[in-house]
Image 1 (tube, rainbow, N blue to C red):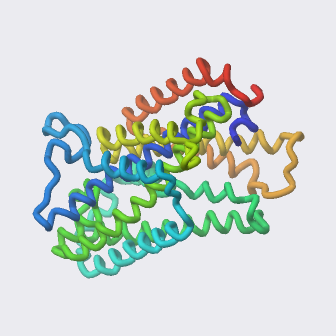
Image 2: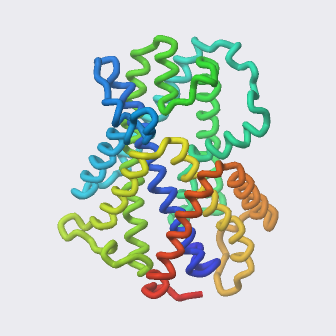
Length: 370
């Protein structure tokens, strides 16, 4: 909607198409992580996932696809197809579980920190910090969603920035704590795994804590997947309702009043991503989609501020025009540090989106072309 108003329908579509990439592949990324924590959780019981279906496709090592990640996605999608909706209470419980996991790990891991693991402190120098920032950006997705509730907030000019910046600060503090403890417990060269927290605890022989945190992490990640699969299907539904995608995706199931066709196509795409791509590949693709959308949103403020046909007597971004420009340039800077294979896959995704728009969406759109 923002893109349609500021730039016109095509750019609005491209932003939406980038957000589809963010929403769906973020679920695939978490599902791949869920699979790793599940394998870690069942290993003390003598159970093991067959090697051929234990991770993303790696034919040289005899691995074809990640069975567990596909099964958890299918299970959650089946629950959603039966009309199960995420409630505020479930979200609150999930947040407490996630925060508890983080705090337990930090306090348990403090006793096993070896100062020698912090040397060298910047093994990849400043370029490594920037590369890390583009990857860790994935951990800060979703805070922009707070802005969608602006119409229901008292004094949004004051409370919206406090809500977004406050939650960002808390998340950054928790992330900092986990990173310091994690790299202090285990040398960074050994942490290229999908379940680092459980791995670190097992590395220092705290298996019972690792089991507890693996179980809690799986619960937390499952609620995230539930929410994002639900949101992804509704995004497809909304685009189809506006005529930008085939109307079959806007049809609601009479029994559960949910877009079953949109849910099916979302499930197929997410399950395929989780089955065949690694966590790193998925996270970088999600980061591209988000940074691309954020770039357009940032520079869009410059155009929006000049519009005289739109009433703007509410919240205004401070530091205009410097802050929007700085924000947009930082997003572009971070995009430039993603891997070359991400550019290739992202270009393919955007080309597919453009073809769909010009072949179908433009001719069937119920929005004004501008």
